[in-house]
Length: 308
Image 1 (cartoon, rainbow, N blue to C red):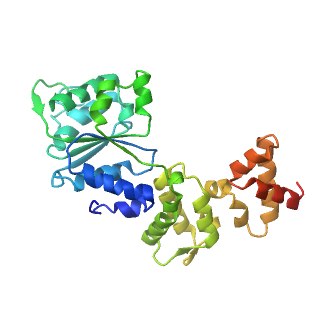
Image 2: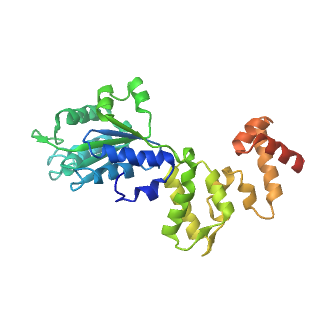
Image 3: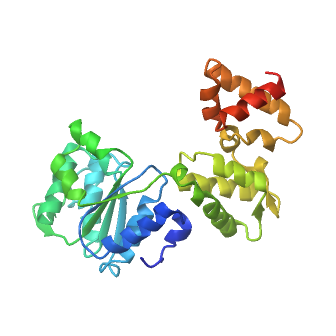
């Protein structure tokens, strides 16, 4: 298993899926092949890339990260490969790019699916020949880096659609790592939430119904969203205990336990929630129960109890 230098276990969890991931990280860190990490936003792709780097033979050299989806093409090319003085308006001095800065180490290319066809071709050349030219330059520079790329898209699908080069895909995807979303490993929610709360507000704890709401929510933004929610709750909550009302509204409203959080208004809130959900699904109790994350038989009982 890899060393825990950046605190991977605390950040990603302890479920069986994550235990398998730690073992995989330990193995792939020992080889120098390119890696493609696939996972939804907020699942911890950069953290995994860093852990691979810090457990590899390149650990003493730089780890350089860049989000390819955050920059326009011209700027991204300059960021990746550097530029010569006068290469474009505003290029007042020669500047080293991320590949030069990562020499000997690891470069992490996040949101690789967003890069343009022209940059895909240039990146393919770096992978094949380990060399490139700066923007506006003629000197060929050699580079020794391990490339770890990441995406929240289905790159295979983008290849089939002609939006991503097949040869580049296979060059990047020598080793494939898939990070499951938090909703597929709910066993990790409690330890993660407790870890984040311990970091943010030592000595505080979650009320039982608060933890139940956290465990029921689907977390579309994954671990990052969970941490943000705990940060908000820690800031709003009283010293000792985090109550359901300290959680973000979307966590409460999408949880079938949301109703229990509004003390004194439980019955009315439940009634409204069930009526609205039934209306949304044309009175179909099975689909309404799925949306509310309730057993259908329990929903039917509630409908009778509340006189809906």
